[in-house]
Length: 435
Image (cartoon, rainbow, N blue to C red):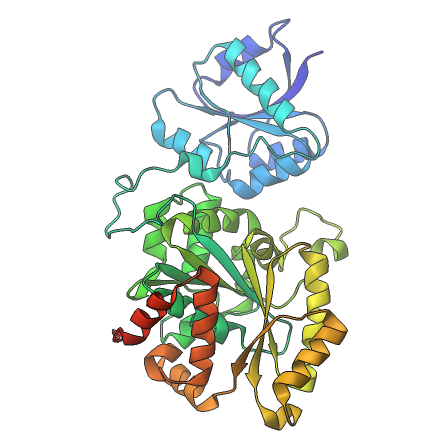
Protein backbone atom coordinates (compact mmCIF):
# COMPACT_ATOMS: atom_id res chain seq x y z
CA UNK A 1 0.00 0.00 0.00
CA UNK A 2 1.46 3.35 -1.03
CA UNK A 3 1.86 6.30 1.32
CA UNK A 4 -0.26 9.38 0.51
CA UNK A 5 1.98 12.43 0.16
CA UNK A 6 1.52 16.18 -0.23
CA UNK A 7 4.07 18.37 -1.94
CA UNK A 8 5.03 21.91 -1.08
CA UNK A 9 7.57 22.42 -3.84
CA UNK A 10 5.37 24.14 -6.41
CA UNK A 11 7.41 26.37 -8.72
CA UNK A 12 10.74 24.65 -8.19
CA UNK A 13 12.46 23.89 -11.52
CA UNK A 14 12.84 20.24 -10.59
CA UNK A 15 9.26 19.75 -9.35
CA UNK A 16 7.75 18.27 -12.52
CA UNK A 17 10.49 15.67 -12.90
CA UNK A 18 10.27 14.64 -9.25
CA UNK A 19 6.48 14.34 -9.23
CA UNK A 20 6.47 12.37 -12.48
CA UNK A 21 9.00 9.93 -11.09
CA UNK A 22 7.09 9.43 -7.84
CA UNK A 23 3.74 8.95 -9.58
CA UNK A 24 4.95 5.95 -11.51
CA UNK A 25 3.26 2.73 -10.54
CA UNK A 26 4.98 0.89 -7.75
CA UNK A 27 6.97 3.85 -6.42
CA UNK A 28 5.49 3.35 -2.95
CA UNK A 29 4.16 6.92 -2.77
CA UNK A 30 1.00 8.54 -4.03
CA UNK A 31 0.97 12.30 -4.63
CA UNK A 32 -2.51 13.29 -3.46
CA UNK A 33 -2.09 17.06 -3.76
CA UNK A 34 0.44 19.58 -5.06
CA UNK A 35 0.00 22.52 -2.71
CA UNK A 36 0.49 26.04 -4.00
CA UNK A 37 1.59 27.62 -0.71
CA UNK A 38 2.08 26.94 2.97
CA UNK A 39 -1.54 27.69 3.91
CA UNK A 40 -2.75 25.20 1.32
CA UNK A 41 -0.27 22.63 2.60
CA UNK A 42 -1.31 23.00 6.25
CA UNK A 43 -5.01 22.86 5.39
CA UNK A 44 -4.57 19.70 3.34
CA UNK A 45 -2.49 18.08 6.07
CA UNK A 46 -5.07 18.93 8.73
CA UNK A 47 -7.81 17.32 6.61
CA UNK A 48 -6.13 13.92 6.92
CA UNK A 49 -5.36 13.51 3.22
CA UNK A 50 -1.75 12.47 3.68
CA UNK A 51 0.80 10.94 5.99
CA UNK A 52 3.83 12.83 4.70
CA UNK A 53 4.81 16.03 2.92
CA UNK A 54 7.70 16.97 0.68
CA UNK A 55 8.71 20.57 1.33
CA UNK A 56 11.16 22.81 -0.41
CA UNK A 57 13.47 25.19 1.41
CA UNK A 58 12.00 27.87 -0.86
CA UNK A 59 8.47 27.42 0.47
CA UNK A 60 7.51 30.87 1.78
CA UNK A 61 6.89 31.22 5.53
CA UNK A 62 8.03 27.70 6.30
CA UNK A 63 9.16 27.76 9.94
CA UNK A 64 9.29 25.63 13.07
CA UNK A 65 5.73 26.54 13.99
CA UNK A 66 4.43 25.27 10.65
CA UNK A 67 6.41 22.04 10.96
CA UNK A 68 5.09 21.67 14.48
CA UNK A 69 1.54 21.88 13.17
CA UNK A 70 2.31 19.09 10.71
CA UNK A 71 3.71 16.94 13.51
CA UNK A 72 0.61 17.65 15.62
CA UNK A 73 -1.66 16.13 12.94
CA UNK A 74 0.61 13.12 12.41
CA UNK A 75 2.17 14.19 9.11
CA UNK A 76 5.90 13.61 8.64
CA UNK A 77 8.03 16.04 6.63
CA UNK A 78 10.95 15.50 4.26
CA UNK A 79 12.92 18.43 2.91
CA UNK A 80 14.19 18.90 -0.62
CA UNK A 81 16.82 21.43 -1.68
CA UNK A 82 18.40 22.52 -4.91
CA UNK A 83 21.54 20.41 -5.41
CA UNK A 84 24.57 22.16 -3.93
CA UNK A 85 22.55 24.72 -1.94
CA UNK A 86 24.22 24.23 1.45
CA UNK A 87 22.51 27.24 3.03
CA UNK A 88 19.08 25.84 2.22
CA UNK A 89 19.97 22.44 3.62
CA UNK A 90 21.38 24.00 6.77
CA UNK A 91 18.21 26.05 7.29
CA UNK A 92 15.91 23.03 6.93
CA UNK A 93 17.98 21.06 9.40
CA UNK A 94 17.93 23.94 11.87
CA UNK A 95 14.16 23.99 11.52
CA UNK A 96 14.23 20.45 12.88
CA UNK A 97 14.00 18.27 9.77
CA UNK A 98 16.06 15.11 10.01
CA UNK A 99 15.46 13.99 6.44
CA UNK A 100 16.78 16.48 3.87
CA UNK A 101 17.68 15.39 0.34
CA UNK A 102 18.95 17.09 -2.82
CA UNK A 103 16.22 17.43 -5.41
CA UNK A 104 18.16 15.25 -7.86
CA UNK A 105 18.13 12.30 -5.47
CA UNK A 106 16.82 9.08 -6.95
CA UNK A 107 13.12 8.26 -6.51
CA UNK A 108 14.15 5.27 -4.41
CA UNK A 109 16.06 7.56 -2.02
CA UNK A 110 13.09 9.92 -1.71
CA UNK A 111 10.74 7.01 -1.05
CA UNK A 112 13.10 5.59 1.58
CA UNK A 113 13.34 8.97 3.33
CA UNK A 114 9.54 9.38 3.37
CA UNK A 115 9.02 5.88 4.76
CA UNK A 116 11.65 6.49 7.44
CA UNK A 117 10.07 9.81 8.41
CA UNK A 118 6.59 8.28 8.58
CA UNK A 119 7.87 5.42 10.71
CA UNK A 120 9.73 7.72 13.09
CA UNK A 121 6.71 10.00 13.45
CA UNK A 122 4.41 7.25 14.71
CA UNK A 123 1.71 8.40 17.20
CA UNK A 124 3.14 9.39 20.55
CA UNK A 125 6.64 9.87 19.16
CA UNK A 126 8.48 12.85 17.79
CA UNK A 127 11.59 11.18 16.51
CA UNK A 128 11.23 12.86 13.12
CA UNK A 129 12.30 16.09 14.78
CA UNK A 130 16.03 16.42 14.76
CA UNK A 131 18.01 17.92 17.56
CA UNK A 132 18.54 21.47 16.24
CA UNK A 133 22.07 21.49 17.64
CA UNK A 134 23.15 18.70 15.29
CA UNK A 135 22.94 21.07 12.35
CA UNK A 136 24.63 24.05 13.91
CA UNK A 137 27.92 25.37 12.55
CA UNK A 138 31.13 25.59 14.45
CA UNK A 139 31.93 28.90 16.04
CA UNK A 140 34.21 29.78 13.20
CA UNK A 141 31.14 29.86 10.93
CA UNK A 142 28.56 32.60 10.83
CA UNK A 143 30.92 35.55 10.97
CA UNK A 144 30.43 36.41 14.64
CA UNK A 145 31.82 39.81 15.52
CA UNK A 146 32.68 38.84 19.06
CA UNK A 147 34.43 35.99 20.82
CA UNK A 148 32.20 33.28 22.24
CA UNK A 149 33.21 31.14 25.18
CA UNK A 150 31.56 27.73 25.28
CA UNK A 151 30.75 25.73 28.36
CA UNK A 152 33.36 23.06 28.96
CA UNK A 153 31.23 20.41 27.22
CA UNK A 154 28.90 21.35 24.38
CA UNK A 155 25.36 21.41 25.68
CA UNK A 156 26.42 20.88 29.30
CA UNK A 157 25.20 24.23 30.62
CA UNK A 158 22.36 24.26 33.13
CA UNK A 159 18.95 25.87 32.75
CA UNK A 160 17.46 27.38 35.91
CA UNK A 161 13.86 28.58 35.81
CA UNK A 162 12.74 31.17 38.38
CA UNK A 163 8.99 31.06 38.87
CA UNK A 164 6.55 32.39 41.44
CA UNK A 165 2.80 32.86 41.85
CA UNK A 166 0.93 36.05 41.04
CA UNK A 167 1.52 39.09 43.21
CA UNK A 168 5.11 40.12 42.36
CA UNK A 169 6.94 37.97 44.93
CA UNK A 170 10.33 39.13 43.62
CA UNK A 171 10.97 36.67 40.79
CA UNK A 172 13.05 39.13 38.77
CA UNK A 173 15.12 40.25 41.76
CA UNK A 174 15.98 36.65 42.62
CA UNK A 175 16.60 35.64 38.99
CA UNK A 176 18.88 38.60 38.27
CA UNK A 177 20.66 38.10 41.56
CA UNK A 178 21.29 34.41 40.83
CA UNK A 179 22.68 35.10 37.37
CA UNK A 180 24.96 37.89 38.56
CA UNK A 181 26.25 35.81 41.46
CA UNK A 182 27.03 32.86 39.20
CA UNK A 183 28.96 35.28 36.99
CA UNK A 184 30.72 36.55 40.11
CA UNK A 185 31.95 33.00 40.68
CA UNK A 186 33.75 33.22 37.31
CA UNK A 187 31.18 31.04 35.54
CA UNK A 188 29.68 32.26 32.24
CA UNK A 189 26.03 33.04 32.97
CA UNK A 190 23.01 34.53 31.27
CA UNK A 191 19.74 36.04 32.49
CA UNK A 192 16.80 35.63 30.10
CA UNK A 193 13.45 37.37 30.49
CA UNK A 194 10.65 35.02 29.35
CA UNK A 195 7.79 36.70 31.21
CA UNK A 196 5.01 36.96 28.64
CA UNK A 197 3.03 39.33 30.85
CA UNK A 198 5.68 42.04 30.61
CA UNK A 199 9.25 41.51 31.74
CA UNK A 200 11.36 44.11 33.54
CA UNK A 201 14.87 42.64 33.42
CA UNK A 202 16.00 45.29 30.95
CA UNK A 203 14.67 48.10 33.13
CA UNK A 204 16.33 46.68 36.23
CA UNK A 205 19.65 46.65 34.39
CA UNK A 206 19.18 50.15 33.00
CA UNK A 207 18.96 48.92 29.39
CA UNK A 208 16.81 50.09 26.51
CA UNK A 209 14.18 47.46 25.72
CA UNK A 210 12.89 48.55 22.31
CA UNK A 211 14.50 45.48 20.73
CA UNK A 212 13.98 42.50 23.05
CA UNK A 213 16.89 40.11 22.70
CA UNK A 214 14.88 36.99 23.53
CA UNK A 215 12.15 37.80 21.02
CA UNK A 216 14.75 38.41 18.32
CA UNK A 217 16.48 35.13 19.10
CA UNK A 218 13.14 33.31 19.08
CA UNK A 219 12.21 34.77 15.69
CA UNK A 220 15.54 33.65 14.25
CA UNK A 221 15.10 30.18 15.75
CA UNK A 222 11.57 29.89 14.36
CA UNK A 223 12.91 30.69 10.88
CA UNK A 224 15.78 28.23 11.17
CA UNK A 225 18.37 31.00 11.23
CA UNK A 226 19.66 30.94 14.80
CA UNK A 227 23.09 29.56 15.48
CA UNK A 228 25.49 29.92 18.38
CA UNK A 229 27.20 33.14 17.20
CA UNK A 230 23.75 34.55 16.46
CA UNK A 231 22.55 33.86 19.98
CA UNK A 232 25.70 35.51 21.33
CA UNK A 233 24.90 38.65 19.32
CA UNK A 234 21.37 38.81 20.72
CA UNK A 235 22.59 38.18 24.28
CA UNK A 236 24.23 41.45 25.26
CA UNK A 237 27.12 41.26 27.71
CA UNK A 238 26.51 43.59 30.67
CA UNK A 239 29.14 42.40 33.14
CA UNK A 240 32.19 40.17 32.94
CA UNK A 241 30.79 36.65 32.45
CA UNK A 242 27.17 37.90 32.42
CA UNK A 243 24.92 38.17 29.37
CA UNK A 244 21.27 39.19 29.14
CA UNK A 245 18.43 38.31 26.78
CA UNK A 246 15.98 41.13 27.40
CA UNK A 247 12.26 40.39 27.29
CA UNK A 248 9.10 41.94 25.94
CA UNK A 249 8.07 45.08 27.78
CA UNK A 250 4.65 45.20 26.11
CA UNK A 251 2.36 42.34 27.08
CA UNK A 252 0.64 42.20 23.68
CA UNK A 253 3.89 40.95 22.14
CA UNK A 254 3.64 37.60 23.93
CA UNK A 255 3.07 35.76 20.63
CA UNK A 256 6.72 36.36 19.75
CA UNK A 257 7.84 33.86 22.40
CA UNK A 258 6.70 30.57 20.90
CA UNK A 259 7.61 27.35 22.75
CA UNK A 260 9.05 25.60 19.67
CA UNK A 261 11.44 28.49 19.07
CA UNK A 262 12.38 28.84 22.73
CA UNK A 263 13.34 25.19 22.85
CA UNK A 264 16.05 25.96 20.30
CA UNK A 265 17.14 29.06 22.21
CA UNK A 266 17.48 27.15 25.49
CA UNK A 267 19.39 24.34 23.76
CA UNK A 268 21.87 26.82 22.35
CA UNK A 269 22.09 28.66 25.67
CA UNK A 270 23.36 25.46 27.26
CA UNK A 271 26.32 25.67 24.87
CA UNK A 272 26.90 29.39 25.22
CA UNK A 273 27.13 29.67 29.02
CA UNK A 274 27.42 27.47 32.08
CA UNK A 275 24.16 28.65 33.64
CA UNK A 276 21.11 30.26 32.06
CA UNK A 277 18.64 31.75 34.54
CA UNK A 278 15.17 32.35 33.09
CA UNK A 279 12.71 34.78 34.65
CA UNK A 280 9.33 33.13 33.96
CA UNK A 281 5.77 34.42 33.99
CA UNK A 282 3.48 33.57 36.89
CA UNK A 283 0.59 31.80 35.13
CA UNK A 284 0.59 28.03 34.66
CA UNK A 285 -2.83 27.85 33.03
CA UNK A 286 -3.01 25.41 30.14
CA UNK A 287 -4.40 27.66 27.43
CA UNK A 288 -5.40 24.85 25.12
CA UNK A 289 -7.95 23.62 27.65
CA UNK A 290 -9.99 26.80 27.14
CA UNK A 291 -9.47 27.10 23.39
CA UNK A 292 -11.20 25.30 20.54
CA UNK A 293 -8.13 25.77 18.35
CA UNK A 294 -5.45 23.48 19.76
CA UNK A 295 -2.85 24.84 17.31
CA UNK A 296 -3.32 28.43 18.44
CA UNK A 297 -0.40 30.12 20.24
CA UNK A 298 -0.35 29.58 24.00
CA UNK A 299 0.39 32.63 26.10
CA UNK A 300 1.77 30.51 28.92
CA UNK A 301 3.58 28.16 26.57
CA UNK A 302 6.90 29.93 27.13
CA UNK A 303 6.67 29.46 30.89
CA UNK A 304 5.49 25.86 30.71
CA UNK A 305 8.17 24.87 28.19
CA UNK A 306 10.88 26.51 30.26
CA UNK A 307 9.76 24.80 33.46
CA UNK A 308 9.70 21.43 31.67
CA UNK A 309 13.19 21.86 30.25
CA UNK A 310 14.79 23.37 33.36
CA UNK A 311 17.29 21.42 35.42
CA UNK A 312 16.17 23.32 38.53
CA UNK A 313 13.03 25.35 39.25
CA UNK A 314 13.31 28.10 41.86
CA UNK A 315 9.84 28.81 43.28
CA UNK A 316 9.72 32.27 44.87
CA UNK A 317 7.13 33.43 47.38
CA UNK A 318 6.71 36.49 49.61
CA UNK A 319 6.97 36.19 53.39
CA UNK A 320 3.60 37.62 54.35
CA UNK A 321 0.19 35.94 54.93
CA UNK A 322 -1.09 36.64 51.42
CA UNK A 323 2.18 35.69 49.76
CA UNK A 324 2.48 32.40 51.67
CA UNK A 325 -1.10 31.47 50.77
CA UNK A 326 -0.40 32.14 47.11
CA UNK A 327 2.82 30.15 47.31
CA UNK A 328 1.05 27.12 48.81
CA UNK A 329 -1.53 27.11 46.04
CA UNK A 330 1.07 27.87 43.40
CA UNK A 331 3.28 24.95 44.43
CA UNK A 332 0.31 22.63 44.01
CA UNK A 333 -0.28 24.01 40.51
CA UNK A 334 3.44 23.70 39.73
CA UNK A 335 3.52 20.02 40.71
CA UNK A 336 0.53 19.36 38.50
CA UNK A 337 1.93 21.29 35.53
CA UNK A 338 5.51 19.94 35.77
CA UNK A 339 5.52 16.63 37.66
CA UNK A 340 8.93 15.58 38.89
CA UNK A 341 10.57 19.00 38.58
CA UNK A 342 13.56 19.60 40.84
CA UNK A 343 11.98 22.47 42.78
CA UNK A 344 13.76 24.65 45.34
CA UNK A 345 11.54 26.97 47.37
CA UNK A 346 12.78 30.48 48.20
CA UNK A 347 10.84 32.72 50.58
CA UNK A 348 11.64 36.32 49.75
CA UNK A 349 11.31 39.54 51.76
CA UNK A 350 11.48 37.82 55.12
CA UNK A 351 10.73 40.29 57.92
CA UNK A 352 9.23 40.21 61.37
CA UNK A 353 6.76 43.03 60.80
CA UNK A 354 4.64 41.04 58.34
CA UNK A 355 4.54 37.70 60.20
CA UNK A 356 5.36 38.37 63.82
CA UNK A 357 7.94 36.92 66.15
CA UNK A 358 10.22 34.18 64.80
CA UNK A 359 9.12 34.67 61.16
CA UNK A 360 11.44 32.00 59.75
CA UNK A 361 10.08 29.32 62.06
CA UNK A 362 6.48 30.26 61.36
CA UNK A 363 7.00 30.14 57.60
CA UNK A 364 8.72 26.77 57.86
CA UNK A 365 5.86 25.31 59.87
CA UNK A 366 3.20 26.69 57.54
CA UNK A 367 4.81 25.44 54.34
CA UNK A 368 5.59 22.04 55.88
CA UNK A 369 1.98 21.63 57.01
CA UNK A 370 0.17 22.91 53.93
CA UNK A 371 2.61 22.30 51.06
CA UNK A 372 4.85 19.49 52.29
CA UNK A 373 7.93 21.69 51.89
CA UNK A 374 10.65 20.99 54.43
CA UNK A 375 13.68 22.55 52.75
CA UNK A 376 13.57 26.31 52.34
CA UNK A 377 15.87 29.18 51.56
CA UNK A 378 15.14 32.65 52.91
CA UNK A 379 16.02 36.05 51.47
CA UNK A 380 15.79 38.85 54.07
CA UNK A 381 13.91 42.03 53.23
CA UNK A 382 16.36 44.79 52.34
CA UNK A 383 14.27 47.46 50.71
CA UNK A 384 16.96 50.12 50.71
CA UNK A 385 19.43 47.92 48.82
CA UNK A 386 16.83 46.70 46.31
CA UNK A 387 15.60 50.25 45.68
CA UNK A 388 19.15 51.46 45.13
CA UNK A 389 19.80 48.68 42.62
CA UNK A 390 16.66 49.50 40.62
CA UNK A 391 17.30 53.25 40.66
CA UNK A 392 20.87 52.81 39.42
CA UNK A 393 20.05 50.01 36.99
CA UNK A 394 22.61 47.70 38.58
CA UNK A 395 22.73 44.39 40.40
CA UNK A 396 22.59 44.03 44.17
CA UNK A 397 26.20 42.92 44.20
CA UNK A 398 27.24 46.17 42.51
CA UNK A 399 25.40 48.57 44.81
CA UNK A 400 25.13 46.70 48.13
CA UNK A 401 27.76 44.02 48.37
CA UNK A 402 27.13 43.52 52.12
CA UNK A 403 23.34 43.44 51.89
CA UNK A 404 21.83 40.44 53.72
CA UNK A 405 19.53 39.90 50.74
CA UNK A 406 22.50 39.82 48.40
CA UNK A 407 24.39 37.38 50.66
CA UNK A 408 21.41 35.02 50.78
CA UNK A 409 21.08 34.98 46.98
CA UNK A 410 24.84 34.57 46.61
CA UNK A 411 24.79 31.48 48.84
CA UNK A 412 21.89 30.03 46.84
CA UNK A 413 23.78 30.58 43.58
CA UNK A 414 26.92 28.97 44.98
CA UNK A 415 24.94 25.93 46.09
CA UNK A 416 23.25 25.60 42.69
CA UNK A 417 26.55 25.29 40.84
CA UNK A 418 28.38 23.39 43.59
CA UNK A 419 30.90 26.15 44.28
CA UNK A 420 33.62 25.31 46.78
CA UNK A 421 34.57 27.40 49.76
CA UNK A 422 37.64 28.54 47.88
CA UNK A 423 35.41 29.73 45.03
CA UNK A 424 33.29 31.72 47.46
CA UNK A 425 36.33 33.29 49.10
CA UNK A 426 37.72 34.34 45.72
CA UNK A 427 34.35 35.86 44.83
CA UNK A 428 34.22 37.85 48.05
CA UNK A 429 37.76 39.15 47.52
CA UNK A 430 37.32 39.96 43.83
CA UNK A 431 36.57 43.65 43.20
CA UNK A 432 33.43 44.29 41.22
CA UNK A 433 33.94 45.75 37.75
CA UNK A 434 31.38 48.51 37.33
CA UNK A 435 29.76 49.11 33.99
